[in-house]
Length: 266
Image (cartoon, rainbow, N blue to C red):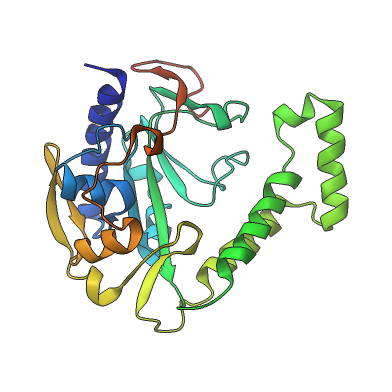
């Protein structure tokens, strides 16, 4: 069994544990992106894929972020408010007894366990500049953040202080809240469509609900009602297998299973 397959099977164990909590708490969740595509085209993982993508409507997502106490001890909800060096807006659930170190995140002082992505989905407008606004704010967020890695270099520290002065932003929390507000700005309006503008990922509510259960490896995952339309709008001819050069994965530089560390959050 190759390493990617071992990671995939481990993620099936993780999502199975999470599904019990989702059901107990009556949380709405559904497969998106490559996970929804895998369910339709492969009845499981896309062979080279190395993560599971789950979306939740905003209210369910925010409830889930408060449920760390419900999770098994080895699973950790990772987001900005649990790890300040975590560079992404959406959450991940990590297995603290594993390692899956991505090259792009190798210098960040965060948990690097095998993960499942959990995305908040908000009401989205048909035409707006939310994506550009989020992109600019996220760029600033990364530049002003003072990580342990940056602190080890006088040059990187100086650059960070310079950007804090340039943007007149010294607090990551304030910038994160601004990003958060842009994502949520349409939630009081019935747009008929929800998604994540950063990833150009969205669907009409009439195509989303009621969710359908589709086979995914040894389990089933909820997927959009009109999953074919969702996948066509996102990928085009989604049944066509892409060339090897176009296949997307995380390129981890280190993978380990069943590790036991004193500091499981590091």
